[in-house]
Amino acid sequence: MQDLAKSIKQLPKADLHVHLDGSLRLATIIDLAKELKVELPSYSEDGLKELVFKANYQNLPEYLEGFKYTCAVMQDAEALERTAYEFAWDCFHDGVIYVEPRYSPELLKGNKLKAHEVILAVDRGMKKAQKEINIIIDKINQELRFNKVPENIVHPAFVYSHIICCMRMWDPQRSLETATCAVVTKQKHDIPIMAIDLAGPEDGFPAVDHQDAFIYAHKNFLYKTVHAGEAYGPASIFQALTYLHADRIGHGLHLFNTAMVINKTGSEAEEYVKNIVQYLAERRITLEVCLTSNLQTLPLLANDVKNHSLNKMLAAGLSVAICTDNRLVSNTTVTKELLLAHDSCGFSPKTLKKIIMYGIKRGFFPGTYLEKKKYIDDASRYYDYIVS
Picture 1 (cartoon, rainbow, N blue to C red):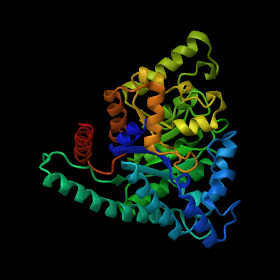
Picture 2: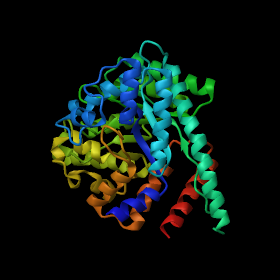
Picture 3: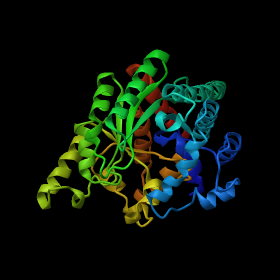
Picture 4: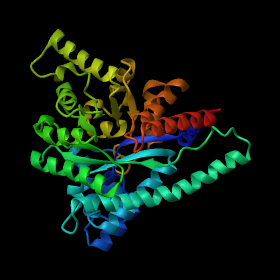
């Protein structure tokens, strides 16, 4: 298993579903808390692991407790820049070449910043790291040429884009303002804001309430991803697809759960789910699967990855990207998530490559179609070179 982990870590990967405010370094939380006078339950890394960022959680509220502290230490431009910079490096050290940090500017602006200033600060951190990382990648490519590796084999550049989150429990007008901020900031500052997201509790907060925000984003050529089917049934995914024009679905765990279909039973519920699955499959709408966080927050899985619906997703031919959700809160990496998926499904080498490449192919890439196609081709060839 150690050899497999080492091999997967070397492979070029993407992380399409990762919350920036759930992915800080513990040492940074402690440093920023002292600097910004934020009270923590402990000022040691071991203490925070014991009290807040645990190996296992009793329920979703306990899992979410950590965000109270991460968000509190990020409400400062320099803190946002630092955390984004470190985040990018942490991803690259795991072999991630393409990443889409998602976050809500409204939850991170505090009393000192405006929403667009949060985005600009995050972008400064990501861009600084990107430049430094790509200098290293250039040296890797120079070494490949020195070693007479064919010129079409190149280590792909480190690329990122922003996903701006709206929250289900918000007033819909606030979501529309957030979508507007994303569009205007992208246009005015020419930074890679590629999508908006809808996060937060599903039960009692239907996606359709935020339709105006997502139609606005849709009309302004932003991509849309929606947390759906994580803690609610197939109807949540249906709304994401039909009302919010979702290009990807966050989690999608309960996609196949006919018992959670509202106002339908038996064959009628089965047909409803079958139609949603067919829609997802034919349009290659990717499911952003986050195994560890599902195991940590959903007791019904009994902490056993084999109880997850990932196998059913793959059997149905769906496009699946394996993601982290929260690197800190779930104590995970893309490599760890892929190992978990392998434990559940026993991937062949061909299937492993297919899933990893789905992550790169289905990213909201900040470039032209031809640039994205070249990037995917480069990643595929480099993948083959690594495993050869």
